Image 1 (tube, rainbow, N blue to C red):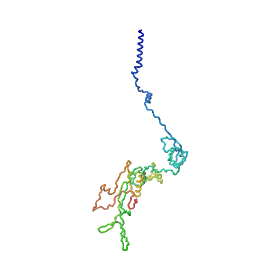
Image 2 (cartoon, rainbow, N blue to C red):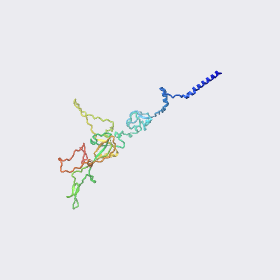
Image 3 (tube, rainbow, N blue to C red):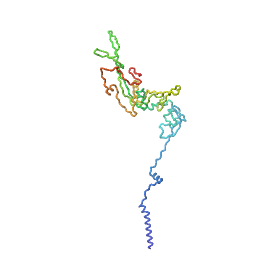
Image 4 (tube, one colour):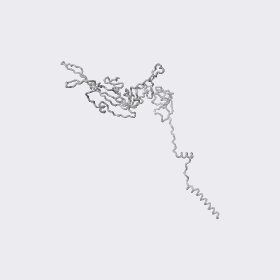
Length: 376
């Protein structure tokens, strides 16, 4: 009996220990957090689980367009073997690209078409009358809204030939004013011709006198000039921020951008012996004309300057300056008032010989009032 009781107690103790090991201990001791490991495979698994899935790449769509498989010169009829269909990325296809060979074969190339170049609808025409000229480089670089006008220049008026293509300049003009008769539009004073009315009613003319009728202490007189009327000089800046399209004459084909200058060939002389120095290099001629890009109204103004033979001087602007600065016209009164020049008084003495002229800045040509032409 005692042995049976002892055996039951031992079984009960073993059962309780088993319950504690299987149920109570796991609840009291939770599983530890995963520890970072240096195993490469484990890291890759963790990273792939945490990263955002990569988006699926969008496939590139291609379309067929017509391209040239050989050189096509302007004005040539396009043969069937000169063009072909090629696949081109749809996003990069020009909006006016041709997609059918039938729209190209047999038509005329409007401009030069190069090999592997996509053919656009504006590159082909139906007849030779629709061919477009290639045009000049000047028209290609001229900004929209401007007009190109040329005018003569020399060493002084072109900033000592320092103005180059692409610069910006202002235009300064000088005007000579004289008084004229409003009816005759001739320089004053007028020529007066006195006449006498005879008894029979006829008129007897006397010799003409240049001057004007006036009165004095001696009675009525004719006051005549001692010399020709002296003009009054005025200088002012007019057109501003003009674009220099080109300095000098344009080449016959109108191509001057990126074209290297043609070397001047040396004259072929007789054979030169040893010790004789080579002939000097020919000095290139200086430009005597310049082409400006200006507004349409300024183009009319500049043409009036040229037709009126108004002296025009160019003032070079800074490359970063596009402002329009108002200026004041300059005359003799402005010079004397601004710089404090007083009129010298008359004196009872002078020097000999008499000073009748001063040194002047004269370069090449000088415009005179008498002839109104350039005289050396």
